[in-house]
Amino acid sequence: MSLNAKHVTAGAVAFMLLNYMLFRAARIVYRIYFHPLKNFPGPREAKTSNNWLYRITKEGSPNEVVEDLHRHLNCKAIRIAPNELHISDVSLYKVIYSQSSAFPKFGDFYAAFNIPHTLLTETDTKAHKERRRMLNSLFSRVGVLKLQPIIHDKLSLLGDKIGRLYVNGPINVYNAFRLLTTEVVMQFAFARSADLIGEDPDGFNSWFLDAFDLASQSIFDMQHNPWLRFAGNLMPRPVVRLLSKEVATLLGMREYAENSLRYFQERSELPNHPVVFDSLRSLPDVRSIDEAQDIMVAGADTTAFTLTTGTIHILSNPKIHDKLVETLDQAIPKDEEFPSLFSLEKIDYLNAIVKESLRIASAVPGRLPRVVPDGLREPLIVDGKVIPPGTIVSISAYTMHTNTDVWGLDAREFNPDRWLTSDAKGLDQYLCSFSKGTRMCLGQNVATVELTIAFAWIFRRYRLSLPEGFEIPKKVDRFTNTYLEPGVKVNMVPRA
Image (cartoon, rainbow, N blue to C red; front, side, top):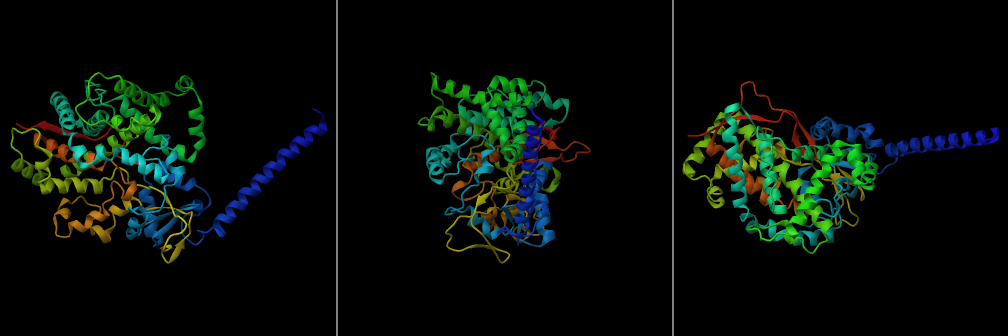
């Protein structure tokens, strides 16, 4: 290469770098001083890039950070990204997430899950409505009642194992409950069991739980760095396995779903309970697998987290614990291991325990971003400012469930009695553990039934207590709440 050519190349590179730097500088100036959201307060870094939101999310407690900002700035709408606001006005939840809401999902957020066109990730309203229609009867009250034998069967397996292991010391109930709910959802989605409860003879570990943890860790990386998702999708699976043991574990979950579909299609006997694959038979195989995998991931860890956290709070308060045990003892005969759901639902205090657990331990506590549409009858106004169309907005479940105007000064305390007052019916509109409206979680009935049966079984069958020196382990929000290792360990002794 001649000297002149080298100079030309160097000059071109320098010119491109200069233009890039000027572009970045101009974009920062625009976002701070000229963007439609310029008058909404928020951290300076959040106004200029997504880095602030990404950082607090990766640190594991984004909802607490955002709520602190609302209090510090004394406002109900704060700017958490260049084109995104978080809102703390609970009266607007029904506007953004209601049955008649025209606020569509923000596609880039849900694309990070890498399972397109499922009930969770579909952004097209008509397509979502059609998919939901296919599954509605399966997840209806009548459909979910047919799952009782599955839940009973998995609890029996769990009880057998606890009966062997409790003499060795505290039980890791978080992992035990995760295996329980995963097995129930697997049976529901795939009509087969992976025998996760029996996988580890000396504890409650499983490669499937490892896959769940890895999946939850990757979500926000995929959102902030979409090229990771594209690169991973382009690579052949054998190559991906060689490059990363962690990703290979994730692939194992996907391949289990694929193998389950083949197993289901080739089965010689019909299952005696509803199966997700049955309702999706008109879809291409890849879409059926995506939906079943989505249901499995969304319905397993979430319910287990709520069950675990509720158990911790019950055991931390002797008054609540004693009242629950006494109530269950009076309502459930000693020799009746699995009362019907109908009889359990008549126990008011048990229902209150379930609702308070869903409130205080919302499994998906954070942002479910929507986009302000054009053509609203009335503009969306917060703090006296109009939020322009095209803005990404959200109100987190954490915000809804800790609002002292709704729940009182004890909003952050576990208090089942709040659901037994004359005003309790008015609280339901603010309980959004499963979101609200047409996009609310289809698995609400499944989760509620699991929690009702499991809480009754656990506290009627066992004497539970927290180990000496117990400290609540650290939890992180990875879209779903997760307890970090070593999990949650509790003394569980079968009652005579």
